[in-house]
Amino acid sequence: MVISFANQKGGVGKTTSAINIAASLGVLGKKVLLCDLDPQSNTTSGVGFQDKRSLSLSIYDVIIGRSSVDEAKLKTKYENLWLLPSNLNLAGAEIEFVEDETVSVSERHFRFKNTVLTAEKDFDYIIIDCQPSLGVLTINALVASDYIVVPLQCEFFALEGLAMLTQTIRRVKQLYNPKIAIAGILITMYDGRLNLSIQMLEELKKIFPDQILKTLVPRTVKLGESQTQGMPIYYYDKASKVNDCYMDLAKEIDRICMKGV
Image (cartoon, rainbow, N blue to C red; front, side, top):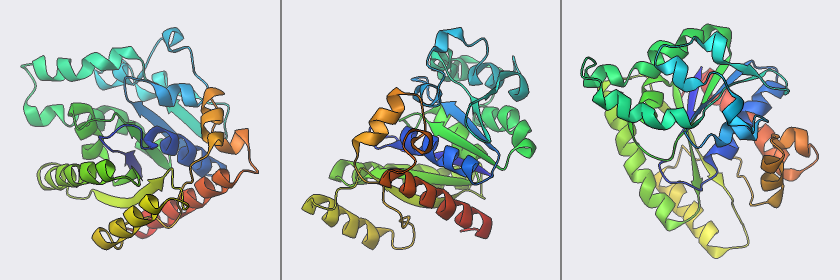
């Protein structure tokens, strides 16, 4: 099962959610490959590999055919969790895809699927953390995915960006990947004390009545602390409320994926 965490707007908790849900699925006994498809490499840092310069291979090498997934993947120190890391080399991938005149436009969109997904049989879940844009790399992730989780902060501009993302998903579904579906919209950094958060959540429920995930992730400093330590929240503070949230989300997403949208 392949799940992309995608939102072209930055700062919505996308990487944090991808890391913590992947780790929580691992705790639940699922074998997980976490793919860092963002040149900023925050997912790579977030599971303990903070010196990206020391990486001999990365997801970039897999996508361009220089390496296999098996050669490039790293076993994290966390249960059932492997990483396909990223580094700055990935930043040039989109330019290379565009400039390669030997590859058709449609073929460019299948690079990830044709390389990384050769390892799909080895994992229960492949979780992709996409970059905050709707460029070639994100389209590659969507073409390869069974499901998308859309992390979203309760604010007006986040809602505005969601319309653009859903339009892109419809186009990918029509042209390249008819099976893709939205597993759910994940509300992050939620503060129930703020009228704006409450109002935006109600508005979202009207627009997407069946797609809002039941578990809301609260705003908390614990997540920031865990990130600086390169640890998923389960391993940083198992007793925290936000850890319970991510464990519940992992179970919820697993149920949705097993049942089908």
